[in-house]
Amino acid sequence: MSHPSPVEGLWFDDGTLVLQAGNWAFRVYGGFLAQRSPVFHDMLQFPQPVDCDTMDSCPVVQLSDDKRDLEYFLRALFDHEFFPPYPAKTEFRTISGVLRLSTKYQVDSLRKRALIHLSSYFPSDPVEYPTVSDSSSWILEGPEWLRVVLLGKEMGLDWILPLAFYRTVAYCSAEQILNGAPFDEEVNVELDAADKLLCLEQSIALTTSASSAVIDFLWEPSVLPGCEGRDDREQWKCTKSRYSSRKMMEKWRSIAYPLKLWVPEDWADLSPVCGSCLASMKTAHTAAVRLLWDSLPQRFGLGDWATLEQIKANALEGSP
View 1: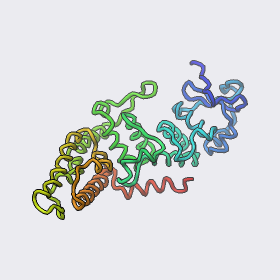
View 2 (view 1 turned 90 degrees about the vertical axis):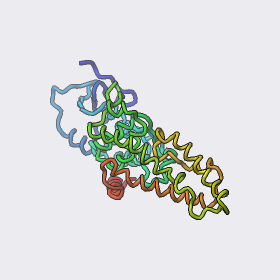
View 3 (view 1 turned 90 degrees about the horizontal axis):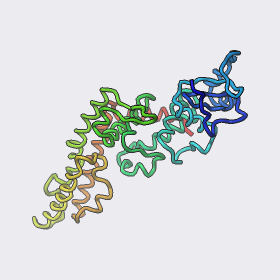
View 4 (view 1 turned 60 degrees about the vertical axis):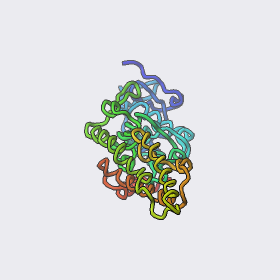
């Protein structure tokens, strides 16, 4: 077996304990770990056997944890600047590593901090969705959303799953959904068979019927009730403006997922319509987006938002 490599910044010359995960080694302070984690406290109560492995005269504890998860967890413990509270910026990989191991080793303050960071990218209202990347402490695109789904299922974080699945469908190709995608050290991250089928089904539904419903306010009815046009010609100006925007949206509908198919900035690009038509369109669009939003948990087999929000509240209760 190759000699484990000390991890820079987590190899303290006066440390009393070496933790090893894979081929990485961390020389840290056993007393500090025991103080922060009841699991390490109990683990270190057991006397070390006389023939235990040592490294630089320190006992070595072999851990089954992912080495990167352990690195992020230990950095969060030993370096207060590495994983500051929300709204400081961070990365999903850091959040997931800290969350997994703070849960396993019962470091509640870090677990709650990680949950708050994670939750910042999962708004509770569709109005917040178009600008959530501005307020979130992390952002993610592409096939890494597969990892978010797997983390949510692994850790029982059901409230993130409707949007995690939605974003997986939006950001991953059909090939990535079917075959997974390689990440650290070529490890392939892949959904289970049932979730693959679910994502492929919803990929079709979200880019067809769901997206059409979100922009139907540009199409139906041909003349909106209360239009301020004094005659057919003036009313046609409003109708023509709506139709023109709808034709433009149709070009995007197969690749733009419905929650971002029509965003606040699009109202400024809309050709002039009367005030009454504009108000009616905004009301209809808001209602359509709300209907889609409310359907997301059911689309992915996750119940309803009220139940999911209660699960979230219970998990975050007492968070600093």
